Image 1 (tube, one colour):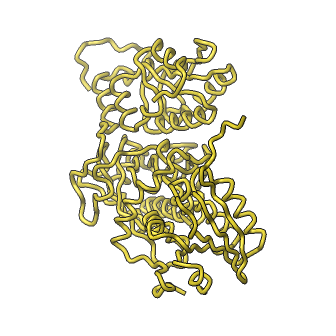
Image 2: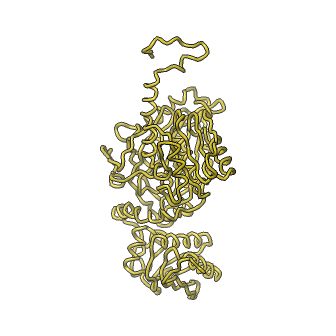
Image 3: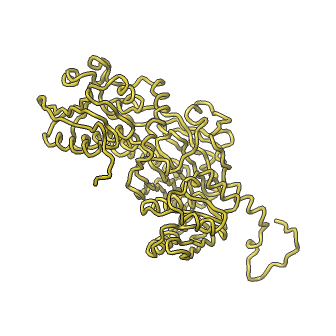
Length: 120
Length: 272
Length: 123
């Protein structure tokens, strides 16, 4: 019997390609339950050898402080692998969260995919 | 030192072994600050701000998030004839002069005394390529001071949680001036900044600058040795919520500066 | 400044609790002695370590740093750290540095040992 608690709204990450940018369409919740899914998503994305990795948060319902830490961990790996990390699709609330925590100092925040892909 | 009683001094035990016990114990007690609960900034020196210290608690490494490191920087004061206590007194009396511009210390008029605050006006790394460093105003509390050392402790919201001890001591026939920190980064953002965005290098530069500046007063130009020990590589996930506590500090800074950030519509003030 | 000026004796008082009788000064120089005692106690199967401060002569801030280091090792091994026999002055130091939040402070050895036997966290 599996006694581990599971998320009611687990993080799912779907990989897409747009020229030299690999895109991860994220959905669900980014919290303590999401660490394996985030790890796995990054590994799959990194395997495509992108110059840039765009995290699309449009379908993400919830990010808590542990989620912030998981995103920071992705940032650390991207930096190690010399991949530029970008984000798009964050709601106003989560953009504010990125600003307040100054995560946005380290990861560019774009309103949508189009503007993210258009950035030099 | 007059004894109240006329005690015969034993020949086996040197005179120093029979000091006035109460006076000595009181002196030792006075090395330590009293517990103060929430920090109160009674005096704010010019150029300092108490916004990020007033009402906060001090925090030790158990309150931090990142890996626990002990970092020691020291310099040999070769051929210096002064006793460690003399050097430490000089350091305490002049220490703002040895701090680099990006990590300025602003003591109160009482200086380095247990219970006093030392305000800090610093610049933190945000990200390379953005040009400016983020200003940070905060402070630390002197929790301990004796003739040869003093220790400061960080408040909530500070980039690291823990202690920093400044000391001067004799070893192997020479005198060393040392800075030793025992700390964890307070939240994932600071941990990341430290490990990946040059925060560590900046810290090395700061303490190297301080020790070399102190040594230069004695006409000494030596290298600073540094050793780092990771005492606990695990992250303290129970404290990940610090990212919100620190948000207030960051928000205050955020409002006070005009950070370069990518705005809606493609980033009109984005640097190339 | 004198070098290590402390002895730490390890006493196994229950199958899972060891008491460290500290005699002397807890400063940075006490590290080896203290960690040695910890290794011995752990090898003896201690789940709870109770620091006896009755014969503590002096503790400076490096001594507090040392307790933090000990605490970290203890927490990583899912053991518990307790303390007793602190004078009023040293109780205040534990309060000042907030170590009293992570290290259970008790008046007597009996209370500390009893607390160690209880299931759950110290706080």
